[in-house]
Length: 614
Image 1 (cartoon, rainbow, N blue to C red):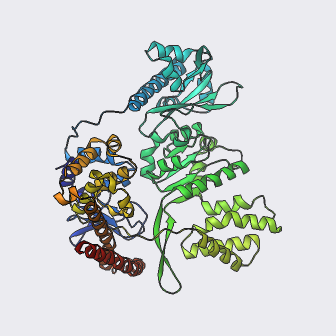
Image 2: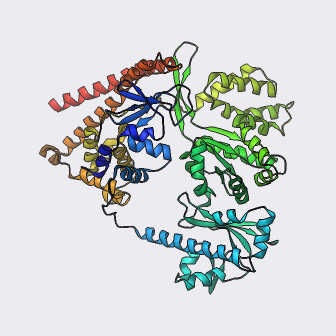
Image 3: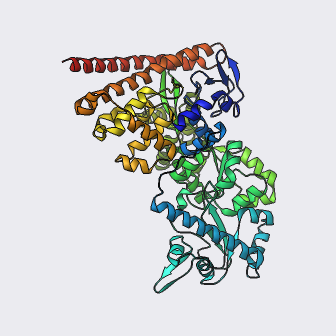
């Protein structure tokens, strides 16, 4: 038994989920309010016999203990493994794969940054040279406690202070250059940060990855950051995320501001779910960090025109980067269509003119609280921001407003809300609603809509023979890679198999795959590599290909048949909560499509057996 299966055997999913969700008995199963979306009636089910969970409401997702803890805590498979192993009382003592050379380089850069942060902090608190920086923090009302928690520092107006200190600690000059603390020049090097207030930037684990630095004189630029390094990417970092992550999960909201001091002041006054984009527009990598913690995002940026434009740019990044969920859309005919809808709530916190968040918080914490509560839905903000400089009496400006707002309206799949914003746009640019509707239909026709799918719970307890057989073929016989093109990650329901399949897809060969795996998944891979097949498969390449095709068809068939199981679960709920009829209609419509797809699968299977008999 692999360590992953041992953990699955010892973890009771009902007990695990109960730590996060109040559950009540529902026949042989348990139900509760879904922890991944807001709802009034319970649609979240836990199945003890299968050791799985599934949301039959807006989420439409499910899985096992690993997938639950990964989604709830916003962590990856390896981190979930560690948490669940600890819960199960299992020691993960198997040796890790030998580390790659860059792992050692990264670790040394972390150590260098940590040493630099400690020394800069000492210079701020305990030296006469740091008096100006201390005075600046006092004027900004940053307390000594906040200074300590954020490990703020000071770099003297000297060319070699940090260089000499760190080289005295045994670090090579070349490594200080790679860390971005020292700048190389012909014949030598010098400190990057001089006479500046230092803000250590940490990753989500609390490791110092770089620094932000504010000038304490008239030097320009006012703010500079560490350059791109092996461990620091400004566009993939959020200042304060290490201190904010728990509050973000607890409040189910992340507030994104621009500046370092905005974050410090928010945390100092109790709003610890605030992070900063460090003066840049939001990037997909930053969104990826945020969406692991919450689906609710509020942007608090400048109220001027530039700030509004930046907010709109950030919103476009958010909309394109955040996950989508498959949602039933009732049609006038009585049927239901399924479309991908943004699975998040994005709002904008309107700041007073010429005020930064830290100024608002310092002057009146209550006013900041009200601003957060009154955060404007993104689309309402977009209407104002997109038209505040337009002359709606001009045809050109009407077209400009429509071009800017129509894609955002398209993202609204709820008919009533969409109709509201269609009417609002029509009134705003003073045109007939029918023109907006026609333009919206054309926009829909040009956009690709993902096919609907409904995830249901996994039917296995510890392992899945079909999945394991399929993966064993793939990892043992590299020539089958092209034959596996019809397989997708959705066909693998067990978290370990799903994770391994994803890594396999992005690895050109098995040695490369092994380098990407922690010992637990490596153990699972070795188990699959050791699985034996009939002699005929081992000797006949065509036989191997046929076997994989048949296995793939079985996985596809299973995925389609799960619709029937979902329908039975929803029928059991029909008399308990509103809104179930729409879900049933969804399954009925999907059932029609699934039947067609199942028929195709059966035809492919029949063709396979006819060829085999021939």
